[in-house]
Length: 86
Image (cartoon, rainbow, N blue to C red; front, side, top):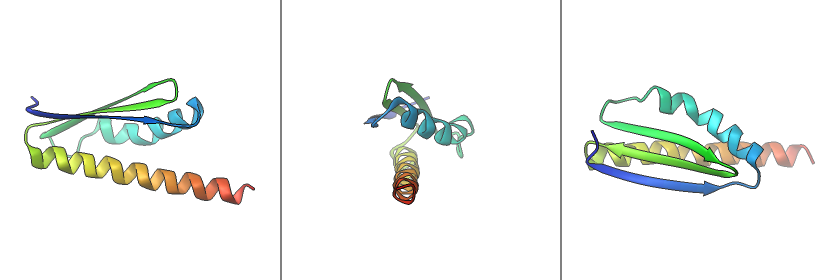
């Protein structure tokens, strides 16, 4: 399928946080918005690994932008909840 690919590895403070992020992103990876791209997500200890494959650069860029936006949003939510719990 893929002509283009990207790999992102993100280290989190704990395995628990990594698992929470994985579970939040899993539905998106299991039901891609378009057949032009595919994302696999896995966890290795406290590292989240996202593997992107796409038929063209536009689809790859769109997938990367979507996942990076969701990760940014999840980080903001995490930071806000952490601040409120103090």
